[in-house]
Length: 215
Length: 159
Image 1 (cartoon, rainbow over the protein chains, first blue to last red):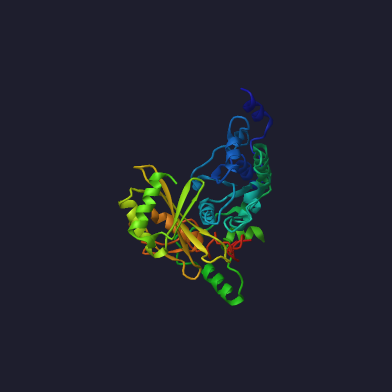
Image 2: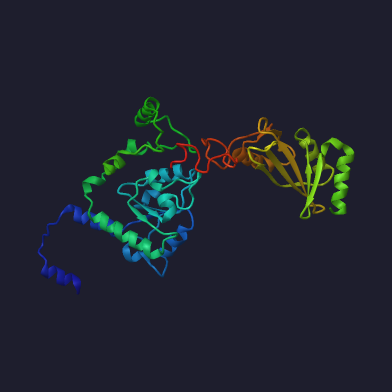
């Protein structure tokens, strides 16, 4: 037969390779996006997976309706202040490893909607890996963003991507319209800090995973 | 004003002249200015006796902080029987933005009044469930007031 025989004859029985390289290669080759279509950018996102642009060439065409099965969240469109807790909750529901692509000017910076209703950049709510400019970006740009994300994944280490503990991952902070839980130790600390130092209350408290990534 | 609408307005005036303080016509539409305290009676009369069975819209407006009365609440009535439209308007001062609810007359007024309360801060007395409907429940202020800052209040706006 073709390739198998050639490989079998030319390669030794045992190949040593860095674990990161293998794992990252597997991860980047099959990035499943979570559908988070919020506005007109979502139309371009749908185009990206359609016949003309065919995102499946890069292994990222399997859009998942459930965040539990998704690897990357493509935030396509303006995030309203009321949508922000929902977006955060969906992000928290995604298992590690997870990435975020901020698609378009509105998701990145609020765009033309510089007002009380729109979050001025989705990076105030979730950590963003790739920003895609444009209003809306062309499908090619989103494809480029996916390939850029793949390059980024290849540079990562498996050690950085341990899943958060179950107890912590359930402590998603849900301000506003969603039911608020009793509050975690981290939240209580933050409340004390807000009261003592007269600082403004952060929209959401970064998880251990985000604190590690930003430092 | 069409004859039919004229008839309705005359009937309303004849029943109680205090119910209609002014009649405004323009662009083929008729607006009746109604004192705030009698809006429920007028609405009930319009629905039961005059056949305006559909509250097409209930909305509010802020005429600006320098105006007095500052707020207005508009009731857009429509009849599915004789296909006429009529607008009732109530003026409210900034110090006392209260008006009686009309939810007991038209059920649809429930959400419309919540929206008006949410965006303008007009309080509908007797409303069964007066809370925010469009803006987040922890929102500070009323967004469609003319003196509301476009970017909202800190730290709410996340700017």
